[in-house]
Amino acid sequence: MDENEQAPEAQPPLQRDVVFASIACFFSSILFYLDAHPAVSLIQDWWVGLLVIIVATASFKSWVSTPAGRLGWDKMKLRLPLVGNVLQTRFYTQFAQTLGNLLFNGVPLMSGLRLMSKATTNLFLRGLLERLVMLVGEGAAFSTALRQVGTFPPVFIDIVAVGEQTGKTASALEKAGNRYDKELNRRIDRLTTLIQPAIIIVMGVIVTVVALSIITGIFQSASGLGKHR
Image 1 (cartoon, rainbow, N blue to C red):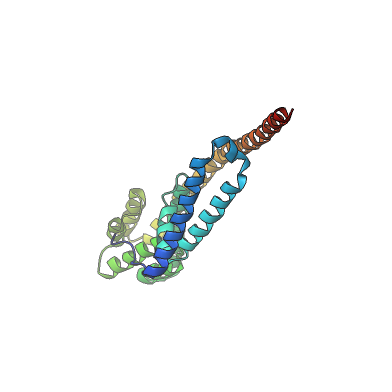
Image 2 (image 1 turned 45 degrees about the vertical axis):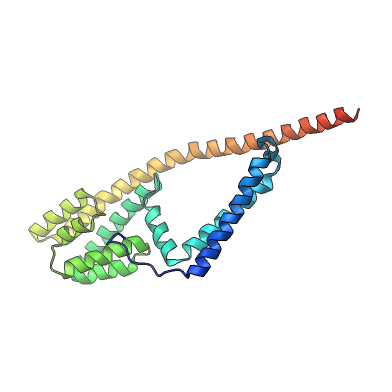
């Protein structure tokens, strides 16, 4: 296990095995059904896809409700295409701006880091901040601890290091926060421009499936009428 992550509580083995066995049996049945039915008929059997979506959603919620699942999902969110970069940049921005404000108001660095750690809802990031608190508490310089934690970008660490050398850590954090706030806005604008084409593609797929279902039904009805003549 990565030393940056907290060890989650173990899920009861019997409950975990029952859940996994049920999911495996369900998807095995779906695969058997898919193998026995041609693709054209599956368009009409829309309930199969709906059932798969419902079970997959319920399984995902059940997994996320466990400590290990919550930790894994929080870590996975930061690595999602497009969205992961936005979440990471938002974290850098909030961390720098909030900690900088705390230091400006006279809060000691250690106390500020502890407050940031407790306020972070992402379990994976909270584990990293707790490690950061531990390293700083052991006497490591703030920028050195950031580098050892490993999730912060080099530019962020360099800005903090310069602030430490000049005795202006709070000002350096404010500068880093402003820089990543602008980067966050750029990433959000880029994501927004990509969402519209994606929505058009999804809607096109849905319309195509519906059209194929209607056309297939018409042809099957016509074929059935022809056989009865």
